[in-house]
Length: 383
Image 1: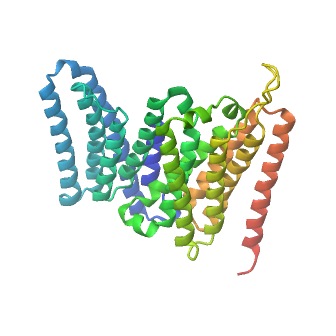
Image 2: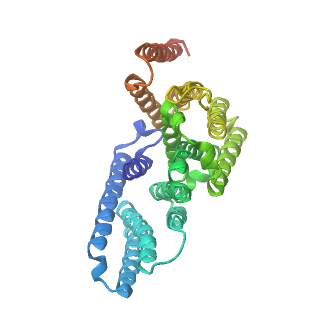
C-alpha cells in the first residue's frame, strides 16, 4: 500500500503529456513539488510513529488537542505559504501532510474513545476529506491520496465482510475501479483538469487495471478462487455492482464525449468495456473443475487465463500505441512497463510448460516488432 501510494502521488506530481518539452523553470518547479511530497510523506510517517510510541502516556483530552492543533497548524501554514508568501510547493507539502494527519486522526480518535463504529468507515472519511481538500487547493497528489484511500475502504469492507472468500475478488475490484477512473478521467478531462483530478485518476486508473488483470492471467488465481461464495455476501455484491456500473457508464460516457477530438477513443472504449465484461463473467461464472474427476486429478482452468492474458496484452500494447498517437508520454511509458512485467511473469510462470511459454513470448515479440515496423513506416512516409 505504501509503495503504491508513493508511486501514485509522485507520478501524479511529475508526469505530464508534454514532459519532454518542459522548460528549465518548469522542471525545477516539478522537482520542488516532488521533493515536497516526498518530504511530507516521510515526515507524516514519522509523526504517526511518534504518536504511536507515546500515545498511551498522553491523557486523552490532550491527545485530541494535539491532533487538532497539529492539523490546524499544518493547514494554516500551508495556506499562508501557498497564497501569501509565494511558496506554493512548500505550502502544498504542508497541506498534504495535514491531510495525512487527518486520516491518521480519524483512526486514532476512534481507537482512543473505543467508538463502536464500522471500522472501514475510517478510510471512507479519509477519502472524502482528502478529495474535498484536493478540490479546494487544486492538488493532484492530494486527489491521488483520496482515490487510493477510497479503494482502501473497499478492500477493508471486503476483508471485514468475509476475509478469505472476499479477498479473491480484489483483482476484479481493481480492474473495474481502474476502468472507471481512467474512463471518467479521460472523458471528462475538460472539467476535471482545472481541479487537477484528471491526471491522477487516469494514472492510478491504468495502474489499477493492469494490477487487476495480471493475477487473473495465472491459472492458480482461478483454481483457488471461490468468487461465487464471495459475491453471496451482500456488501461485496453491492460494491461489485456499483463498480461495474461506474466502469460501464464511465466508458460509454468517455466514448460519447471524446470520439471527435481523440483519435483513439473507439479503440480505448472497446478495450475498457471488453476488460470489464471479461472480469464480470469470470467473477459471476467462474471456470469450475470437472466434478466427476477423482480428487487430486482436477482439471486446471484454461479458458479464463488465456482470455486474461489476451486482455492484458491488449491493454499493455494498446497503451503504447495510444500514448504515441495522442502524444501522451506517460501512457506509452506505462504500457511499456506493463509489457515488461507481463513478459517477466510469463517467462517465470511455472504453471505453463516451457513450450507454451516459448510460443507466447515469440508471439509477443513478433507483435512488438510489427508495431515498431508500423510506426517506423509511418515516420518514413512523406508528410
